Image (cartoon, rainbow, N blue to C red):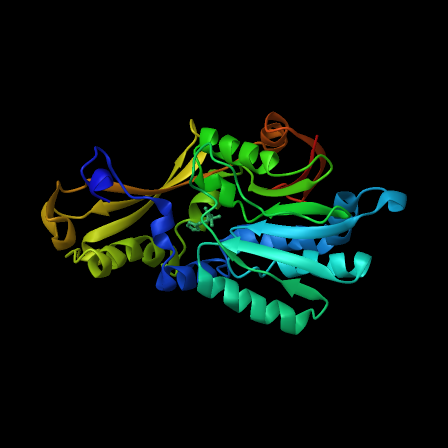
Length: 314
Ligand code: AVJ
């Protein structure tokens, strides 16, 4: 936090959003009329879950048992569509949701085991995003099993392209030939649509953005006045990303007692809080290919707003 708040321009990491209040605000965002991402991806999964599962399992005569692991599972709401399809194909399913939030995982486990009794949920509290270059430990699979890794929700859009590439390579290194990786990405579209999704009329995304200041107040004894910062969403077309910033409405000093730090803001100065990369068609497939997967299939919605791609470890 010290590094980011003393940098120019100032910045904070995007994982900071997801404390308990922030996770609740994010869930509220997914239901906003402007936030098309979740709704669109859910419709794609609803229409094609059985196909996705069958494709991951491979040709009928070779069909191994799928073991499904999800990176950044959160509340795993959309995942239930895939799990239901998997139970339709093979009966019992082992599902391993990975997330940094223990509370989200426990809620997901409780709900899934109640709603789909043939799924066994084995949650793993783990930060899969760090440990550059180090191995991703997925644990052993049984010899007759094939892994399917889910990375949906366009979570990969929060990474810089080189970090996204590294994460996919780490995932590939943790898999065996024949395993698969399902990647969900948000696509480039009209600027007005993108901007509205990150600056909704009800102000939920603004509250989500300002919540990082509320969190710093609580966890680092800081004295931010969240209302002294305006929520800004910007489309950076050169970088193909939506950026979120907090813009100081006035010149001010903010003290962070736990860091023994006083941060100075000029009027209009910003803190960069998030990048959300948007992909052109074919880009997600290229990422998978560069990481050692064969891009086998892509499913999209009628408007072409979101894509779900299946990569096979080669
Ligand atoms: C969870 C990273 C997919 O980038 O759309 C939502 C987070 N930020 N509104 C996204 C987010 C602002 C979201 N991801």
